[in-house]
Length: 430
Figure 1 (cartoon, rainbow, N blue to C red):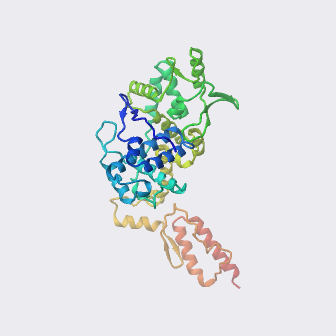
Figure 2: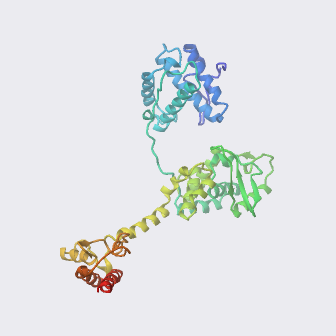
Figure 3: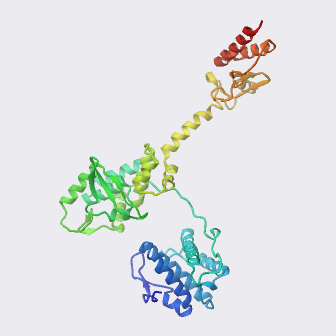
């Protein structure tokens, strides 16, 4: 078991001095040493398989829950004493907490969902791993987690994207390179900042960018635009540092905050408002799908593990949706549009509407079919054209009436069908 950490402060995500932790492991261990030991053992184990940032996030959420329990329910000795009513009390507590971004707003549903999800995973794993201090039963269910919103990714319209690229061309070479790299490769900003000096490779008669293992634990190759290759070569010629990074700025490594400031500056110069680096990734994906790039290719370019991650761009691909809508609309319009321009338009008389409906009618043996002629019917005349159909002279009046009805309405294929049936009857007569 790990020793109880002595660190009592955590660094804030924004600017300013580090913020003191409300609860720390020594405080938790002073009230409930068994609870602290169970949670620290769990953190030790996940540190062997998860990224450091994931362990830090889990540490914070477990400390928050442990601090709440030891403050509100000091009688608890360990995790095995935690019951459903403790979880419900913690849920109410989360609903009253304010966010840490100095806005005075309550915690967002996403933050609450992540906190409860981390706890649910913790409860499940300590039970599966047979910890002696595991809870006695399931304590958190799917219904406890707030339903997250599913907003569409924010992307730049084609005109705004063009403005951004024109504004980037007027910046210094490094800022221009940063903007165009993000816009033409779709890299996540973290991946972009971690590109090593040897990230550009030449294979299969073209230049590629090797993207290191990142958020989804995979690496990939992204094709490089020839213009980017030229800009990167120019950047390398003017460098005087020995940093193992593909792009540097003023002799320093790039970080996400520097990149975000560059993007904001160029967007402001372009007059398109606030733009975040990740919007350039969404913009490239949307541009690609609108111009016919397959979902599989987009997924490979963006480093998605499943197509479900990529399908979100099909929801925002305005041209793709518009094209699909137009194809369907043409078929739907056939329900309302009649041959030769005859249309039952709004405001028309009842007589005109009746005439328009009658024009499409097809006379059957025992009634009429009013399906518009523009719409195909896989069952139309299915029996009459079958080789096993049997008819004789007693059906001649009905067949002749159907033929004349079809001829009056220029339904030529039906005329041919009834001619064939009438010829068969006449041929079979003695």
